[in-house]
Image (cartoon, rainbow, N blue to C red; front, side):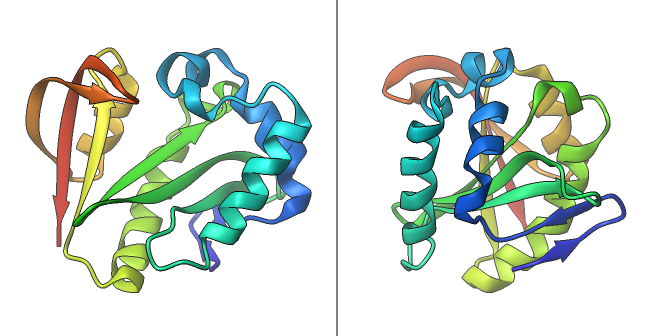
Length: 167
């Protein structure tokens, strides 16, 4: 898959992206909001990238795609994961690239393509309550707030918001 937006390319994940995946994963925001996606070593990132590439061949994924600037700099990712009978979107932009609208641009470009590919009409976004920037991204991408409360997030009760996007 290749999706081009005004400033970005969303492409297939390849094994040569391990260094960028590792570097993007260790920023303070990623450690705070998605600690299970932090890779302290390039070898840890390599194992995960290999697993993600293999998983992308399965019907239920997860399906993770790097977000690249037009100059091919890897600045993060967008993904969809299966939730039993539903799907959830996830994304991360490396700290030094945040505040530029890249997450919003990537999601707006990604949603129509991935939803068509998966033949789905709705997708969830789950965000920790304290992650204000992600609330704004989902709002800008026309997700509707469905829940504010405490639920399991990576196995721990956390205050969060759940959004839904419908076609």
